[in-house]
Length: 295
Image (cartoon, helix red, strand yellow):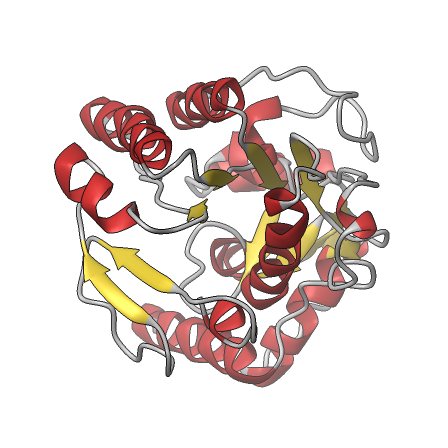
């Protein structure tokens, strides 16, 4: 939202289920539940582009259907009624399931979701693509509030007390800020009818687990001195109740390639997702609090 607000050519409205705090200058804010078709239609009227980022990331099947699937249908119908506004859906590369190989481009992977969450997002994607919208698929995203990727990974490695294969595994990572700026750049070709249907939000250089976590560990004064092989790490994780399937993603190369985003935006070309500034402060504070709570 901040990146959109800073663009001189766009008039921006923020639509959220909660009260929008710290609204940037020039941005109007509307409180709206994506499950309310009438409210969504009213909120979207008069807009040319809808950047759809509303997703439920829990496991309750009722919300997966009502928010991710039906909510997306509400967005599409509202966009249709708003003189067929363009729709850009922020999805996830998780719709591919477990990647058999790393580094493949858009169109090289089959959509094969392995969880109910990913299945609901894949269904939402189908609705967007059928409407004529575009999909942005990041893999891993860092930033303030991240409780699904880097923070739990940091906590898992601290519980194990060791790196896995020296932290060499490479991942496709972008920060929320970098992703936001990329979305802004994509809006123009979307309006002009030149935006690809599916875009991988990824840089050309995946980041290693060690490079992502070292600034956080240094910030809390922790140094992992040992390293174990992935097979040993998975056994250790299982013995400590760490979800093995999720943890396994971070013990081997797990990244996607992409060419289409770079044609429209420069922000992800050299993106690393390594936390800095306020993002790093947030991770350090969260990890420190967790360490103190475990003492």
